[in-house]
Image (cartoon, rainbow, N blue to C red; front, side, top):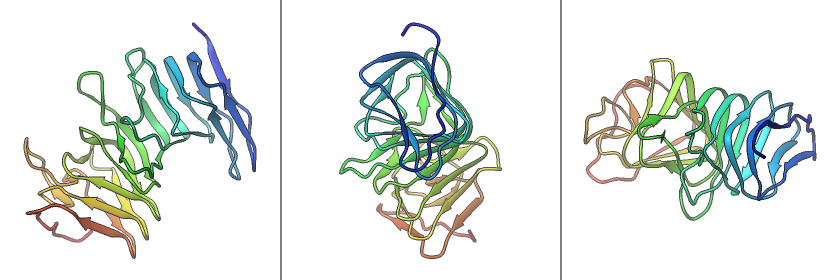
Length: 238
């Protein structure tokens, strides 16, 4: 498909799904409508998108471990993209045709394979992907080879039963309105030498959560696991 938009706009409810045919190349793909009661949109196998992926409304787009690649960027002002692929940094979209623009919705990483599911931090040469809302629901999710950046009022949440792993670089933000939460039975594994939070990053040192983020919530029975050597235990009231 060389132009135009393929749109999945069906309202999916309990036990309902709407599927994109895999093994194809799309120019623009739009995921809209509503998903409720476990309904979702998915792909039958890996797809390529050349211009733009747009996720909007209250739809759930669950691509599991199947690939969504290509030169497209991602426009997201609503909905939820569930992704468990762990062989490459996610999302895979190169964003050379259109940029990443995430102003709403949730990026839900649920990788639980033996290999860590890495969250992509940049595109192009060094442009940061500015995330609005990230949820960690898988048991083996981590960062890739760069910082994870949250936008204004952005959120990073390790959900009940989820595990996030970070050993260097940092979760940072564009301003002071972002927040990080580790829910009950969620685990945040930190290997950073400057500990869990509060350190202003330098070229060689950083804490897992940058000092630009002070709104940190650790729910009852949440776990912060210091996994490195020679680490500083973060101080202060969270």
